[in-house]
Image (tube, rainbow, N blue to C red; front, side, top):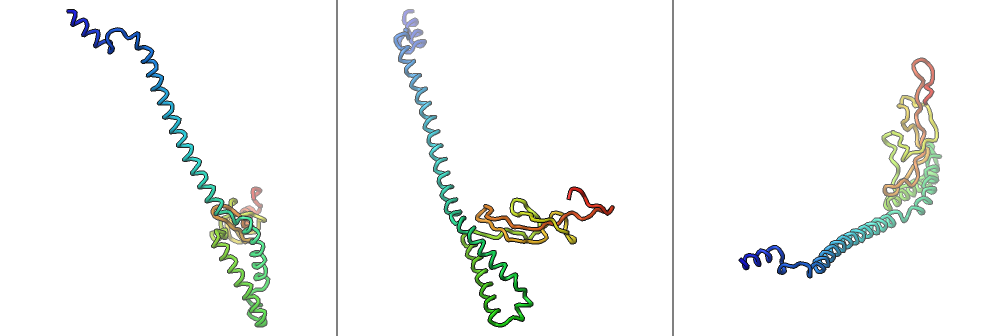
Length: 193
C-alpha cells in the first residue's frame, strides 16, 4: 500500500510530492518563456520596420532619379512654347509661297522643335493627351468657355498651350477652351452653363 501511495504522489507531483521548493523555479521558467515570446515579437517588429525603411528608401531613390529633371524640364517648356508660336505664326500657305531662305529657317525651327520634344520624351517628359477631346481637370486647365459648334458641353474645343507630364506627375496642365452648354430649346441659356 505504501508503494501505491508513493506512486500516486509521484504522478501528481513531478518532483516527488512537495512542489513548494520548486515553485520559484516554475515561476522563473514561466517568466523566461514570456520574455522569450516578447523578444521574438520585438524582433519580428524590428525586422518589419527595417524592411519598410528599405522599401521607402528604394522608392525615394527611384523618384529622385525619375523626377530629378523636373525643374530643368519646366524651364525648357518655355522654349518649346516659343518654337510652337514661331511655327504657328507662319501658316502653311505662306510658307509655301515664301522665299527659299525663309523656308529653310522655318524648316530649321521645325526640326529643332521636334528634337526638343523628342529629347524631353527621352527623359520622361511627355505631352498631355488631349486627343480624345474630354476635359479632365487633373490634366487640363480651362481658360474659357466657348460655343461648342456641335461639340458636347464640357469637351475641349481648342488647346491654347500644350501640357506636359513627367512620369505620372503633371508638370504643366494643358490650357484649353471648353465647349459651353448651348442654348436650350426654349431659346434661353441654361443657368448652370
